[in-house]
Length: 386
Ligand SMILES: Cc1cc2nc3c(=O)[nH]c(=O)nc-3n(C[C@H](O)[C@H](O)[C@H](O)COP(=O)(O)OP(=O)(O)OC[C@H]3O[C@@H](n4cnc5c(N)ncnc54)[C@H](O)[C@@H]3O)c2cc1C
Image 1: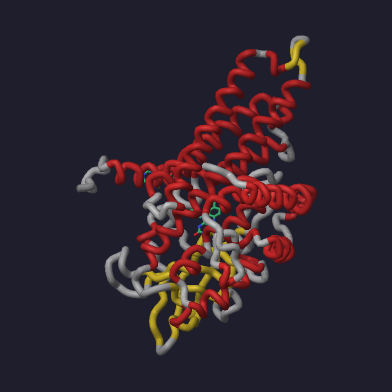
Image 2: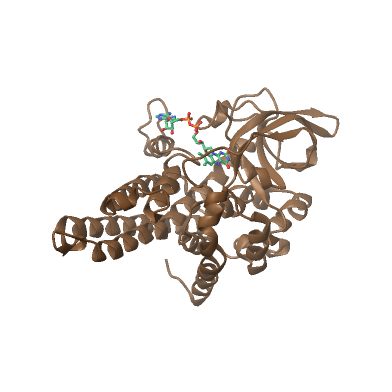
């Protein structure tokens, strides 16, 4: 990956934003279980950060994915995972399909305001009975005149309590599970939408998460993204950017854990010497930093392939898998060296330990990534490639 002066300028913009507008408030937002998402998104929109690789015609910067990767990396320097997650949902989870396959009307009505930070979006795929098994979801959108009438529910939806629209995956026919789904943009103020109370999460406390219920929610059929029945395919494509974003976002967050642990272990003395002088500790931290560099290389390779327009499914799945596994390893190992301090709720390592745990679950659990990689390797029983 060759970074230019433009990449570095964007990196500095995002890093300054994290330092000035996010980090001073993280403790308060984590405690409150929310942050002023519209206010923060408007500021990010003004900087162009919500539309880095989106078309210029709709207010985006029209840059390639490497710039997005740089922004995702810098957001990892936030002192909490919840705010970057909310931003990632907006840029890489609920808008890629609209940008790639949406009509001009959808782009003007939802994408342009999302890029400007005037609208907050969310992505509705998971259901109570269908998280990993996306094909098994039950929410329906039945045609009625020029409209769809939507019934069902979506579970664990990030940003949903504050969102202005949802990019919703729904069954629009009784065809086979991979051919009966459509992505539909639904305004969140539509009559018939209601929410559970905020879900009480292990981590990502500052991001708001709820279950959404759809009870005869009416939306024009022209709010469908692309052709009817192609939703599963579009969502699988959209997942690739979500997974690369997830991997990129973890890199600096993990480095930050290692750096903070080095600083702590340099100061903290046991048996008359700094903790860091124990070979078992400085060797372990060197090993973890080496692993983070390997994650960086893998993520950059996936990004380069994506920019070339090649199928990135295998590498994006590998990067997401590695990010989840390494995230658990780094935060757990570092927390150990903080001893009792690491076990305190407000300790930075304790927060990272809780926040990063999501990476192995959300956007496709580790085992789902392994299944995809096996499919691409031709080792999944009964699903061998030619
Ligand atoms: C904080 C948070 C935010 C989220 N935000 C969103 C969002 O904005 N939008 C959205 O649509 N979803 C969201 N999700 C949902 C998330 O994507 C799902 O939780 C995830 O896909 C896993 O689905 P599940 O929870 O139903 O787990 P299940 O499908 O019940 O699986 C449970 C576990 O079983 C294992 N497993 C599953 N299948 C297999 C298999 N075939 N082989 C071996 N092991 C397997 C995995 O370890 C998995 O973690 C969010 C979740 C959380 C916790």
